[in-house]
Length: 259
Image (cartoon, rainbow, N blue to C red; front, side, top):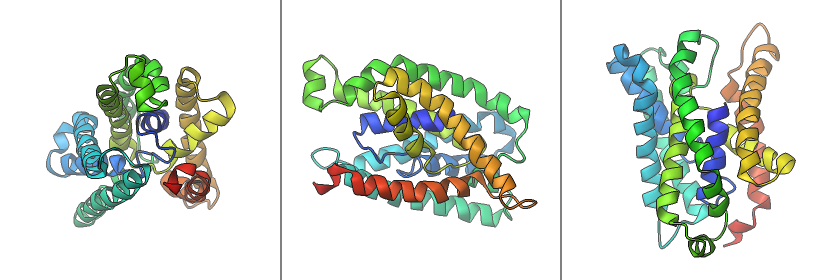
C-alpha cells in the first residue's frame, strides 16, 4: 500500500496529471501480467517475481508514454491510452488465470488473505529500495510540478528526470502488484488526501503517502473482511467502489480537461 501510494505521488508529479495512478494508466496490469507469466511458467523463480513484474510495468509505461506523446504529454491522452493499455494487460492476465483454473487470482486481484511472512520477506527489500530512491528525488519532484520551461531555467534536465522518476514509480507499483495483486485507485486517492492535509511539498507528501497508503490498504482489507462476514470482499473491490466516485469528482474538478 505504501509503495502504490508513493508511486501515485511520483506519477502525478512527473506527468503533471492529477488523475495519474499506476492502476488507471496500466502500470499495475502490465506488472500483474508479467507476474502471472512467471507464476505459470517458472514458479521456482518466485523470489524474482517483483523484478520480473518491474519489467512488465516498464513495458506498460513505455507503451503509454510513447502512444500518448504528440508534441507533448496531454493529460487526457495519458488517461485514455492508459485505460486501453490497462484493458489489454488485464484481459491477458484474466485469460491466463482462467486457463490455470483460477490459481493465479492472488496475482490478478489484490487479496492478502493467503499471504504469509515469506511474501513479506520477498517484498521488503524491493520496497525499501524503491522508497529510498523516491526520497532521493523529492527535490526534483517539487521542480517537476512546475512548468517544464521553469524547471529548465532552474537547471533541471526535465526529460531525463521525468524518465528516472517514472522508472522509480514503476518499480514501486510493480513490486507491490507482484506480491499483493493489482490495487486500483490507491495511488490516486492517497496523494490527494495528502495534499489536503500536509500540502504539496513532496518533503512531507512522500512520507505521508507511504504511511497513509499502508493504512488505507489495511483499512480496505479490514472492511472487506467484516462488511459481509463470514464472506470476504477483496480489498481491490473495496478500493474500486470508493475510488470510482473519487475519480469522477477529480475529473469534473480538473481544469486541465478543458484543453
